[in-house]
Length: 301
Image 1 (cartoon, helix red, strand yellow):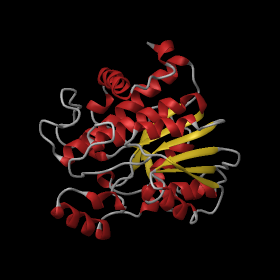
Image 2 (cartoon, one colour):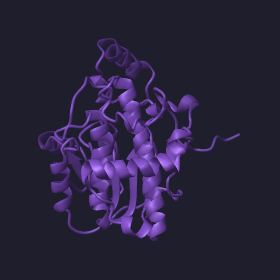
Image 3 (tube, rainbow, N blue to C red):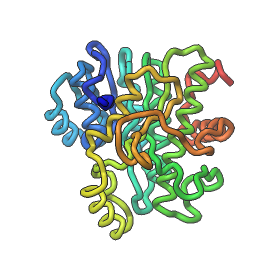
Image 4 (cartoon, helix red, strand yellow):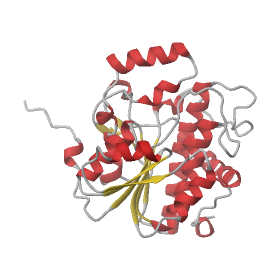
């Protein structure tokens, strides 16, 4: 019996004439996604904090690219990036992130993981929304189930008790709730733009190299070598969510055991990540914290 071939980047549609923004595209799954999208004909904007590293990364991409500075840990940088945008944007991939780092703050005073992974992308998406014509894909993680799997509205900055894993898990849960509420607003406004989420499984990237614990960093280096799938395989759920005919608010991940590795498929999320009331509350709080309002809000509230 012939085994059915599983979806991979060679199955991408023709993307000539389309523009994509990939945040954090100077390494890891962001860079591999940029390569795949450009290879399919898209014009890819590498949105990166370090433009020198971004230009070095862009030099490895065969296709149409440009590099623009974007620091998601600085809302002024997010606003500057969005204000400079002109013309339609077919695809926004919210990929950049930090993971399990020691206690740090963004320029605006937010806990770094929540501020970068969620609030920075929340502000960027809403500021670019008037230009968007296709999709928003936000990269979450199976880590959205870590800790007690909840959004701590009374301590979003983890100031009372900071735990790197729990703070990271909360930021990834926020990514899924953001996608859920964004899709609700898009649907109720009559927009054809779709919001989806994806996670890469366990992929070998440099994201894990900044963990607060030396023991965790060592363990991740070993796991990256012997357990993890490649960043090329890890970016497939993102590419699948970006280009395949899927319902809004879909969540894509690997099809293997534990969703650690494998071909992209629709996967489940935690009950907390599916709660529309929490998603709406988080959206309201995020608007208050960032000062960025959804341009669709007046039509859907």
